[in-house]
Image (tube, rainbow over all chains, first blue to last red; front, side):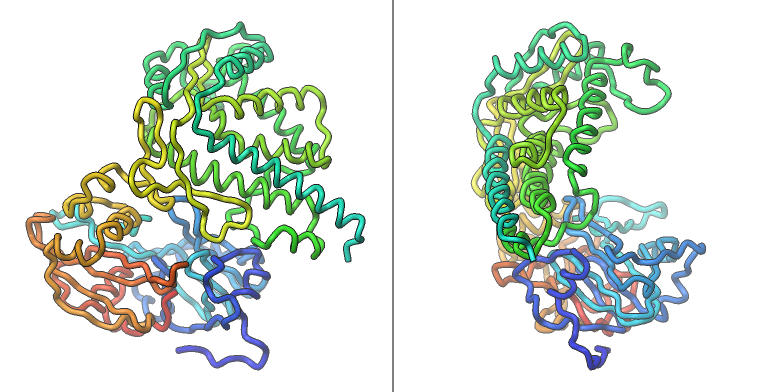
Length: 160
Length: 403
């Protein structure tokens, strides 16, 4: 569900770019408040999944949790080299780890945040993640060339 | 507040930086024959710097042609391993390419010290793009603005949008070695960075460093890629054609490769590189955009680019996709998911294709569409979309937002 707006002014894309030093493309509406979502949300080929949805499939494997620095952490970027998906948060409010086991093999990170964190992308803009625990997964598609080990079709990550 | 005198000095320096940066961009994009005497003279001077005798020069019409000469002569162009146990302990035993790289690396360290920082792009994110004049009045230090206006902009254009694509086309990563490639005009982004700091009066270089920089600058103004070998140097001509368009929302003159009706880059021997709006595409995209080839392509940006070129409706008709079902895309208001059955002969097995729409809007107001292959057993577009993220249809239906 969408979170109710807090009493202070909502964060806009312009605020976020100022705060993080990350920029997004100019045609995205900068002054519109960024919705904060506590449920399932997707940004291009990434999806942020509330942990409860996938608790049986995904487990953190080690204690390698790290704090998200003010400049953010890059979760994924395209092959062309540009356009990363970056997670930003106020210092001390959000931690993350890449060490996750996912029976689907799609998880690239787990996030635990006590305040609103943001996922920002130069083309897709920004989106707010409400406090909570989430799994970040990549998108896949069916591989049209390769036959898997058991004669079935394999899958592959979305490549761009 | 910034004092007025500092402001006017700053804006003067910025004007110089812009002008010099424009010159370097033009050199990087130049499509005219190399100035061979100038280039050879510089290389001879560089060999002299590393105490090597002047090499024999072999000119090739393109990097492709040059590389085949390099590959055919592993003795002159030995594999370069600049790290590890197989490197001779003393530089005297190194190949000219390694000695030269070593020397240039040392000089760059000195230049960085004189500038006060390296080419600042170590970060993965782009610095906040604001117009330089506004940055100046808000008190952003001039060197930081110059990094943005010159270093980052030249890097984006010449390294990311031009050199990377040419390399991807001409030097596939086969695991082999190509000796060591120097990029001539496409080294202009880092040479330009140091040049601008000196010419804007913001850095003073030691004489030997300035001399080496001047040599490399002369080379970037006069030729294409080159490969220094033992007694022999292979030089490539510059392209004969380079077609670009402005990068969307560029503030500092950044451009990317693009040409609709032919190769974006062409060399005299007809080596071609096809690029559509910055996306490097295989030749078949331009010449024979058949459905079979689209479906065999792994890169979804290439697939999207070629389908947009022929039109989604045309593609769906040509591929004889049979519409199975449509459903609203949860979290992406106004957009629909469409599931199609793909004729068995296309992939020689049952398959379905899910057409999805981007949540975010393009500069022209449109939304990009992508086609994803999904397992053939899906009849419900929402369940198929969920599968692409490893989720059930019930879970995916709860998608709150897509950006």
